[in-house]
Image (cartoon, rainbow, N blue to C red; front, side):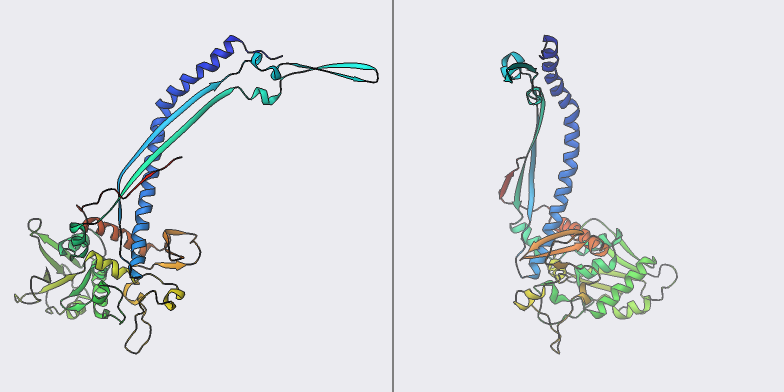
Length: 390
């Protein structure tokens, strides 16, 4: 027969405060550290999904909606305990005597407690995490104004000067330079007619080559909000592409330092010098432009859910010619196996492959541009509060 002594009972009960104190002193910081990283990853992934979803919505002619995480609170708790049931309170767990009779003989056997009875004694530790997230929609006069207003030229110049590709920045955010069109119709809902873009695309591609060779730089001077900006070409040896760039952008053949100014200031050459007059898109215009990188399933096109863009001779226009260098958003009926970001919309999956570094860079740039352009916005009262039980 098993017996539990006073000493073993005291040791078992003494584990409870040890576990509680030990959990608070060692498990607590570890849980907070791990949870912070996990929440960070989840928030980044959900924000990317939100950006992608709004690009897909723009292609389908649907209005955008952004939810901002207003607050995130999490409660942690650890509960520990020990369970000891004395054998004298469990008659069935005591040694049992079984007597059987067979062939005129009586046999008596003594059985100890079963393994199931032994498992009733032990120590339990329970960990609980109760997060609560509050989401608010971005809207209001200030937000809508920032969404529809032209992106400040100063912001684009600063982004370019910080190392972003001039081809990526100008292709996405500029609709005209010195009157040269960059698919201006793409700044709104997908047009039904093919856009003008060829000369602009050639010019920014050449500027990118010169940027890589460090043959073109951006100069910024003056106070914040009153910056003077200029594009400097041929600081050293003349680049072989410089002459072609000047010709396409309608600049003087010997232009070396070209002033850069927004379209509302004036026209190119008005002051007699070399000038680049830049007309920027709005943030919503950038979303509409990049929405044309979304590959739409053929059945949705046939159903008339999206606008078909056609050339003058009635052929379908391929938007990859315009946006293919900066982004490609693919679609499939089944969930993608290796995707950097993916969302499901209208029964299909839309995604950016993990291996498509070019689209991932554009996605990162779009996120930076969104934060830059839509900052200091007003949010409504919480739209959705989610208590999550584990």
